[in-house]
Length: 114
Image (tube, rainbow, N blue to C red; front, top):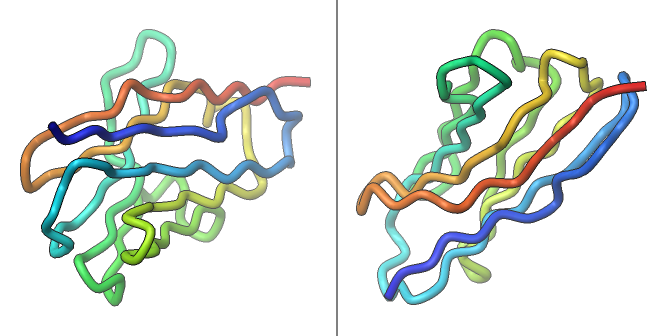
């Protein structure tokens, strides 16, 4: 059974940083793209960042460009989302998505507040 598990969320003041991790287990293949989504309070879930199979292509929502960096370690079957210069509007539950199987993690809460 495939599991997708996020970690690294928490409470951080505006301007702070967090690094989220997404670990995949129970999956033998390694050629899969990975996405990070988020859902803020009373907002629809939105795509935050995408990374290709080999990591040579990335894509970001306009709202996080220049502040967030997505990366991956295929040997560890883990994706990372480095979030810098955090703003209150970045608050929400962040989800990792394994698109090839359409599997979601349980999410990790990020709260940006002073």
